Image (cartoon, rainbow, N blue to C red; front, side, top):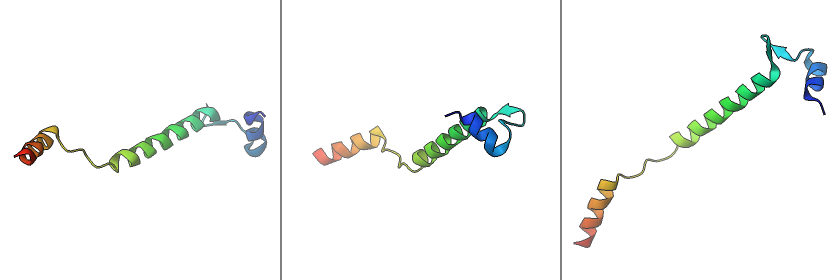
Length: 62
């Protein structure tokens, strides 16, 4: 299965703005990965700081 041949039959060209379609597909994939990573990491709650956790532990022992 030759993707360039299929693309050529559908759209009549294998370039966009003078750059091969493979480049644009890879840029699209990278953009999707970046967006997904941002959604995941911005959705995480921050961990408590080690100093606060140590103070809480000392207070529990007393």
